[in-house]
Image (cartoon, rainbow, N blue to C red; front, side, top):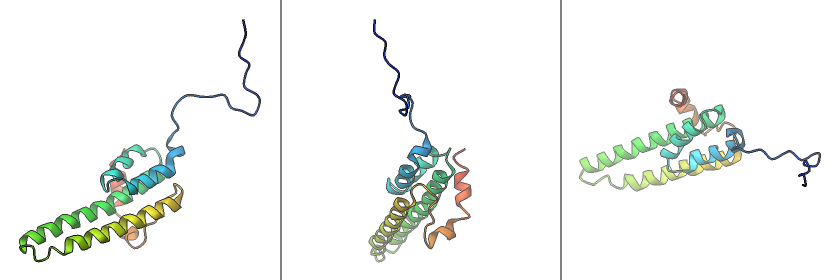
Length: 137
């Protein structure tokens, strides 16, 4: 009968289990901005609830994208009420929302999992972020 030798020194023994949130911190921050705003940021608010940085970034993305979605819906209502005269505002808002999404994605890529400080909109939504973070307890 042969025995399996132990691993050589310096190499850790293989362990099972999935990596924790800390290992995926950067990925979760990027995906909170990248995936189906604001639904993706809501998903990562709950997935990363054990890591305060991931939770903060996802909450900030949720607030910013949620506000953008509310503005989009209001523009649709305004377009319908005006009989389509102000319908040009909807494609313009899509362009603005795309720029917001792109800036958030670039900042998340550069953050390496740390807290993201979104320019201009970050300070405006700072008071709402703790409330949204409280959703994922």
